[in-house]
Structure formats: C-alpha cells, structure tokens
Amino acid sequence: MISGSKMYGRKDKIHTWGYCDSCGKYLKQMSYRGRKWTHINFIPIFPEGPHMYVIKECKKCNVGLHLPIENLQELVGNIENNAETAMLALHDGEEYFIEKNENGEDVKQLCVDTLLSAIEMLHCTGSDEAVHELLTALDKENYRKIYCAVKGKLLELQGDMKDAIVLYERAVKNFPDDENAYWLLAASLYNSEKIRESREVYESLLNTSSERTEVMLLLLEVYKELKDYVHMVDTFEACFEAHPEFAKQKKFVKKYKKACNKGGVNPKKALINID
Image 1: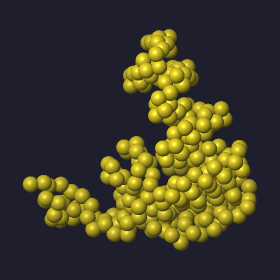
Image 2: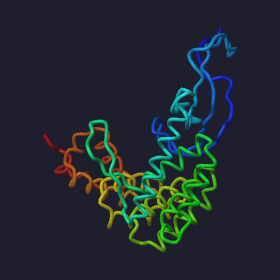
Image 3: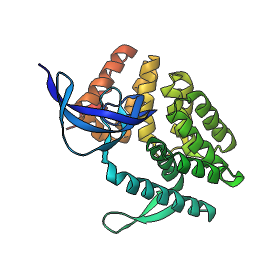
C-alpha cells in the first residue's frame, strides 16, 4: 500500500520554462489551481487544506509557490501596482523607483527587474489582459530596450527560446551599454545548450559587470561544459584571489583540484592553504 499526499484536481494549467531555485535546473514548470489530498495507492481520500494556486511547480522536484486562492487577486493587484510604479518612473526618465521594505526603510528598485518579474508572475497567474497591457505600454520607441527584455522573457517562459534570443541579441546590439541585456542573452544561450555562444557573452560581462564574482562562477560551469580546463583553472584562481574565504569551502577547493588534475597543472597551494 502506498500512502501520502499530493495535489489533485489541477485546473487552468499554464506550462512554462524557467529556473528552479530548489533543484537548480532549468526545465518545464507548471502553474495551476488545485488542492492537496491524502491518498492511498494514489486514490485521493480526504483534502489537506484549502484550494491553492500553485506557481511555477518544477517538473523535476515538484517544488513551487503555493498560494491560497483567496490571496491570488491581492498578489496580482500588487504586481500590477509595482509595474505601474516602474512605468511611471521610466516615463520620468528614471531607471529606479523607491519603495519601503518591511522595516520601513527606503529601497531602490530597478524598473527593468520589476517589469521582468511582473511579466513572469502575470503570465503564470493567467492574467493575460494585464500581460497585454504591460507589453503595449512598453512598445514605444523610448522604452525599446526594456520592451526587448520583457517581451523576450515572456517568449522564454512560453518555450519560444529562439525568438527570445533574437530579442535579447537585438537589445545587446542596439543598447551595448545595457548590462541587463547581456545577462538575459547569456543565460538564454546557455539554457538552449549554445554553450560556446554563451561563453562569449559571459566573457564580455566579465570585463564590464560590477557582479564580477557571479560572472566567474557562471563561467566555471561554462568551461566545465566545454572541457576547457585551462580557463577553468584560471577562473578558480581568480576567484580565490578576489575572495580568499573561498579557500575555506571544501567543495569549491575540491572542484579546483579536480580541474587542475584534468588540465595537467598543479594547484597553487598559496591560494588554498589558508588557516
């Protein structure tokens, strides 16, 4: 006999692609209405709580955001309000807007990040009219680089990675100073298994981004995929030099030594032997 609990009665399914924070994979996800039931031999016996709206449930690990149905409209309303605030800031020529955090402190929010998050959540909650209104508002000449990013993100969610990459490439070409476009393009190329192309974009970011450490960590994965152990070793050593505390992370050091072994070089003991 098999007993347990799982979601049943899934309705209004929305299939998307995205990155799962839980298992670290980029793959299919699903948003839907449902309810968790106790089951015996996968036959639902009795419900375990209220009807829920599940957002971006991972196909691999089944983890997603569970929200009571009665709270869904409030969530959508907050997302729309944030998107409107970001649009007003853009209209005034600002890249940021200010909002209060939980402690009542002023916090800068980047408009493009807010709009990227908005298009994702609005799509995953089935708010098609709000998605259309947001894209229409952005489809103006003075918002072109943000439109390319937001429209590209929507296409990526829908599984149309080819056209998403076209938009990201257009943004990089027409707005070479827009770091955000490079991040979106590099990630989409990597997730499309275009590893060599993603390498070029990440290496461009390495020379320009303020998030240099994050770029290096991503490049380690790229070089590993390409079996480029020479650049992998160089990047590990750059990480140690920038962040000596990494030498205290046993798994990180172990990966460095493995890359050295595959690359036919000796680890630099001065970088990793830290008390």
